[in-house]
Length: 235
Image (cartoon, rainbow, N blue to C red; front, side, top):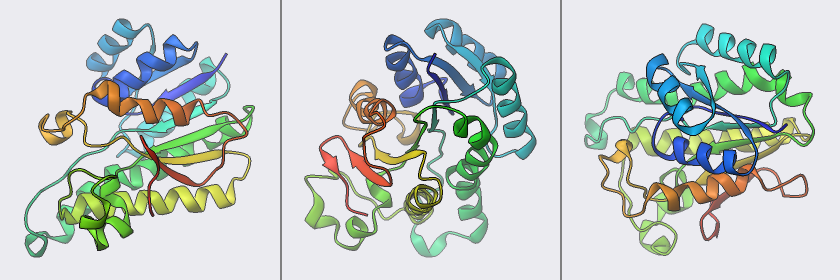
């Protein structure tokens, strides 16, 4: 069986991605930091609940152990959980503001990769999908007007944008180190979710498409890439 773990999967893009992968035959662990919400989502999807708070080392370790005990391996790890953080002007943000965002968007991914790596390494053609954003592209942030076709909405969000840029770098460096694991950073686009107060211009069905595609791309797909719905996104 194809075992997939998705963090932050009790709603939004994670939930829709889980639904699609279950339709394709995956056994999906719906990661959630709230046990009740995770169990409700899992029941609705026909998935397995997984209690995991990616900001807590012990929680992530326990989640990996639970999956190891039940499934023995993980074929796909989708680092989907993330927060937007404050939208205050750049000069008003503090180090503590950025630390809160990084603890989820960056360090959370490090925690999950480290904990689940032994389960990925024993799988056939394993994959890690990091749900990033076009807002994390250095090229786009340097000249947002030049990339309107790729990124219909841009904002100078110091905490969020820089955290996704860091997640992109993690994708590249993990891909270089673990060549047997296919790593992909994806930009789901400006999707209407709780993350942006449902102001996004596309549905979760549209946004989840590129996440699902990256999760099911197969062993011959390239690694260390940054993809959006219309193709490669500039780093």
